[in-house]
Structure formats: structure tokens, C-alpha cells
Length: 111
Length: 111
Image (tube, rainbow over all chains, first blue to last red; front, side, top):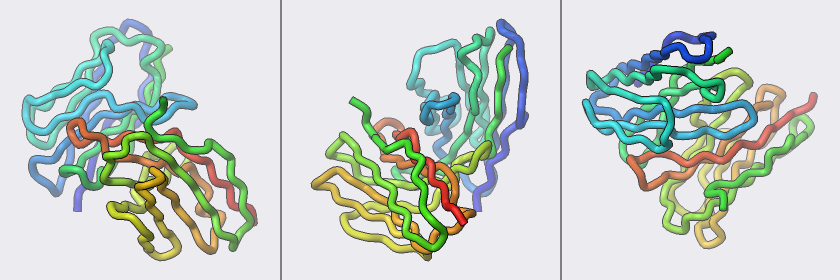
């Protein structure tokens, strides 16, 4: 079965600081990988998805970026955080048009 | 127009009753539909998927799909206090196999 790891679990960062969130998956090969954000009182927003190593698609223009250096590793980054970047960041993996499974998430607070 | 809509609730039902959660979607070509359960502070957990018109049952959960009406629902029989959570409806989005989520319905099962 698939296992998704995310770290850190919680993070408090000042405005203007950089960000790096990591997601790794186990138990599957060549998964589709996704980064979602869930802000307080809002729904899940798709940020990036990747169908393979080095292949990144962005859904929402913003100051965040994503990279996929290895098949089962997905990284979310920012050079300068904004207050509006606060939220619950979720990594998910899936295959085709079928189910997606979420990792435990990283709760980011930008102060 | 929102692509996936849910009543935010809260929906309150007594223990042992049937909880009925509803979702409508705007893309008539959607093919895959999912229900996730999200406890407060936790990541979403997939509980049901449905791909064809009709009912799909899994334990106390039944998903119902009506593509003509663009409507999908989740019934929870014999509701338990442990079912208290936010239920997210998700629809497959033809963009990198990503999902489009509703904002969720909060369910409260009272003892």
C-alpha cells in the first residue's frame, strides 16, 4: 500500500523568509503527485501537479514553485513568503483518473 | 460559477440516524466522483468513489450518482459520533488528473 510522508508537520515562518516543504511517497512507482493548499474557511486549492520527474504544471500563478527531482519526491518552495501563504499544505498521490491519497499535511503559519 | 458545490452545514443528526450529504457539479463531462472525510486538523481520507450512475454501498456508507442531474450524494447509515467531521466532495478534473473539491459539509452526530 502507498504511504505518503510530509515534513515538517508544522512550521512558523516570518514574512519574506524562504520555504521548502518535502513530500515523499512509498509503495508505488511513477505516481502522479499533487500539492494542494487549504486555507482557513476555504476549500482545497490545487497548486501544482506532476506526472513525472521534472514535469511540473502550475494551476495558480503565485510566489510558490514546485520541483520533482526524483520519482517519489515532490518539493514545494518559495523564495519569499507572504502572509497569504499561510495554510494547510497537502501532498497527494494518484494514478490516472482514479483515487487520490493524501499525506498528513504541513500546517504553515506566516507571521 | 463554482464547479463543485456543497452545503457548508453544519448538518446535525442524532446518533443512529441516517446522514445525507449532497454535492452538485457543473461539468457535465465529469466521470469520476469521490467522497473524503476530514477530521479537524487532519488531512482528507478517501471513503468512497463512484464512477457510474446508481448506488454504491460500502459498509455504512452509500454513494449515489445521478449524472443527468449532475448530483452526487453520500448516505451514512447508523451515524456515530465518530462520524462527526467535514465531508468533501471531489470531482475528477481533466487537467493532469487533478481533483476539483467542494468546500465541504460539516457533519455533527449528537449522542
